[in-house]
Length: 405
Image 1 (cartoon, rainbow, N blue to C red):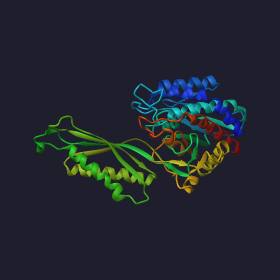
Image 2 (image 1 turned 45 degrees about the vertical axis):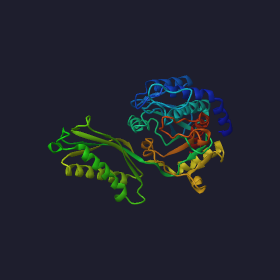
Image 3 (image 1 turned 90 degrees about the horizontal axis):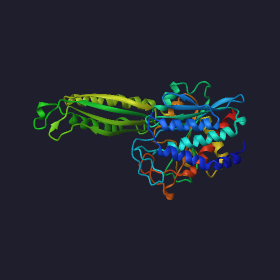
Image 4 (image 1 turned 45 degrees about the horizontal axis):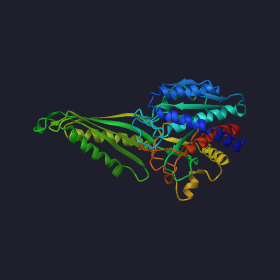
């Protein structure tokens, strides 16, 4: 297909894609509770001539092509936001106490743009393109839920692509960076450490068991895992983000709860840290006459980029955008910057564990142009100039891969 023509077609959809993005932005919803978001996406797809199907608790899938024999390529756009109030300086803020601070409104609107492009070129698709509109990425549950509901079958998916917009990148909006083969996003695990003591009057600590004291010692001790138990090449982050216990200054509470997350780049390190967390927490609590229980909640595995697909994606985005606006991680490293690994986890990892997959980063706002806040910040903004490029990359990469496979 003609890359220049596709870019022009994407550019002609600019106002429509921006309109979609702003509706989604001002109606931000979280987790699986995407009532307005899902209804909007479904309606737009139906207006284009698709027959979207529910998938899992709040996901949608739609099929483009299928008129020619061939493989199946999946493109993913996540739809959920974050549960905090927006403070960004934009003319279209969300006022319901939630915010698209990770750019998923950009992803979903770019996917709708790609759906329009694919519908215009449906007769040219050598196989089938499966569009995945996913909920609950921020809590690492949506992708797994859709897979359990049959996402990767009927028809069976042979390859998959995700795009993530990035604020604060020192590149022109619409520039794409292709992940290197191998792991590009760490596994994630959320956890709670529940410490049970015995409450008593603050003036008589000897009459009880102080869970705050035990929890404080657990918090400090967990830092030793990174400092003394991991080798230099075993990269990991263990963060305690919450510490709750007590309600009065003169009362020793009955219990305390620590909450946090782990990021690891391989499964062996992941398992080791979880094992040591339990051993340390239980042992220290026991030393202080308390009890501790470590509970691991939602999480996701590592995101693995397939070597052949990564190389293909690098070739395709350069064809589409030109070498000045498309880079591989290897190129950036040779230029003195760039990394193949992000510290942020991504639940598209579940897809990457099942089928050959690749993750692309899309620059959506540089610091010198006023986009200085990072993802997940209440003041973060994204440059809408990236939207048409993102839509074209979704459509072109999928069509070219099917053309060559």
